[in-house]
Image (cartoon, rainbow, N blue to C red; front, side):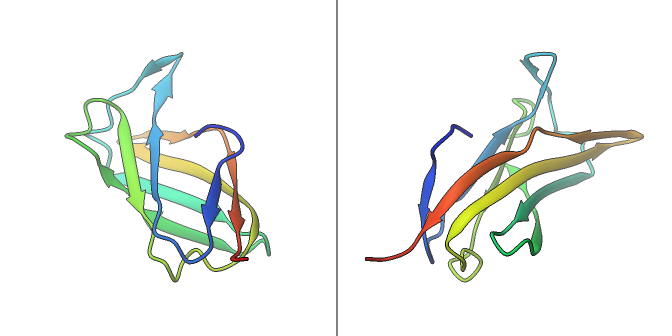
Length: 102
């Protein structure tokens, strides 16, 4: 994710992460765990199962949020967690802002 991302409160964004290893994408088609881990402004956490955008060989994993999940304004954190056999991967932590209505 890029910096300065703003998401509208109660919206249904699609979160997209490309898993990389040493600067190149890593295929995730054999992963048995595809988790999007969110930390909300109030420090509560939300873990959701991701899916492949294509077939997973491109390293891209997505999660489409439900509007009732994007429920607190402020800065959120996001990290992907994946398991492939005995190999466990955590991406860098990204942040994004949830903005309220005017």
